[in-house]
Image (cartoon, rainbow, N blue to C red; front, side, top):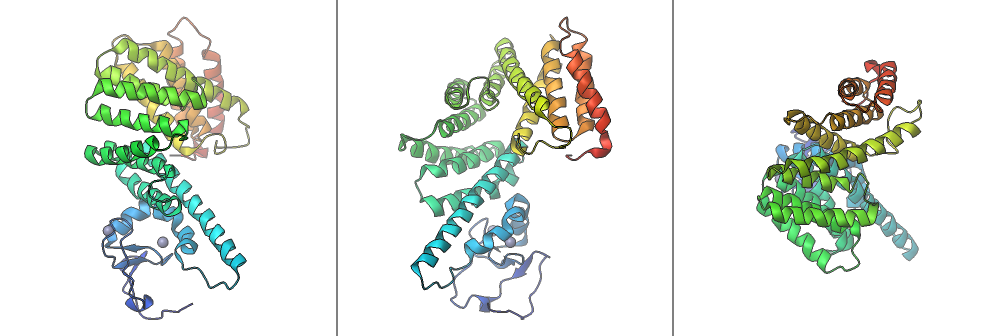
Length: 371
Ligand SMILES: [Zn+2]
Ligand SMILES: [Zn+2]
């Protein structure tokens, strides 16, 4: 270990100027985000470099905060092992860490996308792609999930030609891989559908979403929360086409799928545990929140109020937030659900809603965990 006692000019708490003597070989360090020449170094891991503080900050918020320490063993040169067995063991360990890194960065990017934070999702998605390239090579099917994340972020940011580039890479790779999983195919079509929606090619978008739903249902079944994400996106296209009746019936599918999924989760929910970490990941929670809220907004603004559907959606949101550890939000949506449940002839939901309101009131807002 070389100890560098030289004074460093601290630009911020997290970065220091690169000490040229620390890299005697003169290997040029490149910025983690833009691949330009780097002048700063992360002081916590010392293996990550940046061109300026802005890129350092963006990377920190986007992904680096979560993986800083994980990068140290991956990016540090392999120690000298005389035995082949030791070298093999070391390589296997690094590979395991790299796979872990791909998973973490993918999950972080996905969560940010569900929350609509497109710009912030880019560092994680880019890292996931670069790391997958290192592990699997430049044309492997394992790269497709990262291409799709980057495409989705770029559609969200309105950078459609960038998105198109990533999607044609993904399409090409899937085409060359006949054994490619249904999950990857469903995700590819979902993203092509998003791109076509953004370019106002609505018929093309509907075709891709139909394929998306087909592949997703092969993998997960028809009344599954993953599959119904495709129905939701389709419904949004029908709204653009002013076909409100079709959109509304698709929304009903989405609402009842989520409603029964959350009802089951709530039944198995043990009073002692505060969150649903194990049954439900944060990214899914963000997706559900975003979809259900969007549906509630459309329904509430439509001239013929679909109150049965409003009840279902508001009740789902209440369960989602109760399970997510936010009883105050659960109360807010629960009251909304109760109100609309009293306006419909079918009162079957009134009782479960009242039960949930009671549970949420017992937990009280003072126990709020999530925002
Ligand atoms: Zn940079
Ligand atoms: Zn670091």
